[in-house]
Length: 328
Image (cartoon, rainbow, N blue to C red; front, side, top):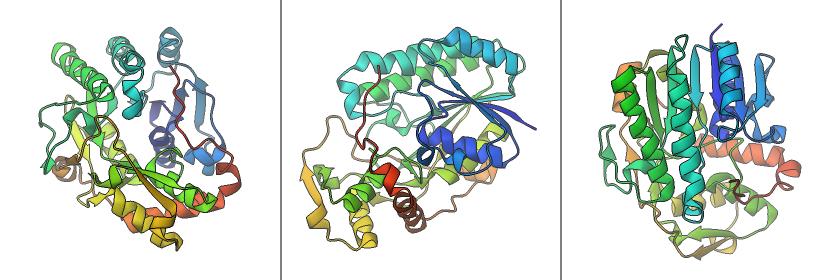
């Protein structure tokens, strides 16, 4: 039984990966700084999770306790989804983003590198580090971050590069483009659109939704992350992405069509957010050729799953705050 330690297990990506790892027969421990949310937001709660143990610890405040736990558990693999997210809000309190994403992560890495039992550390990064770019970019594309969020993530990525070069720290990094799926935070575009339509609320579409994205189902991302965790090359980065591109506008139109409502009645176009990248599309050839991965969940099927999830949990989700709330 593989022992996996997941940092940021309450996040959508972390909770979905925990569920996937449990289904692979792993023993999983997870930590997040907040208490576990309602079950509807935790995919691992929807299946057998008897081999999962949760710990409420904050990477910014409880590093010693976290390391004591890791030293006690001695996991073979540590997968880190923890990050201060949200691009637009990073302009309001950039220091909070740098503290979590750069300073606290670097301190954590400096402790992890001394753990001889660790087979692999998987650092979940973001394509935001590339800034806005055209075409499908490979893993060696130069960094050009355009927001405090992106700069803070790039700083940690570059620090890990030096740790690998200096210490041979067994790190692999992942970058996935626009993950989605059942259980995602309600302030993200897909669940927010579905929930607002069902609640009769109007959705604000920033900049008219002209920016394009390649949405990928978190189940496919979890499969890729698992493969990278087991068989990735230390020091390497892997892109996890689909080749299918859609504008935010067309995505919302598609959701409206699936719910049988007129776009104009449920959507309001507002100004664009500061520093928002027009596009970033990732070339995932490396992952596909080296590790035999492929995406299996198409956008139509994935949206149907999300709609079904919101509808089946509507009583609970409609009472949850649909807006992002910043925690320093």
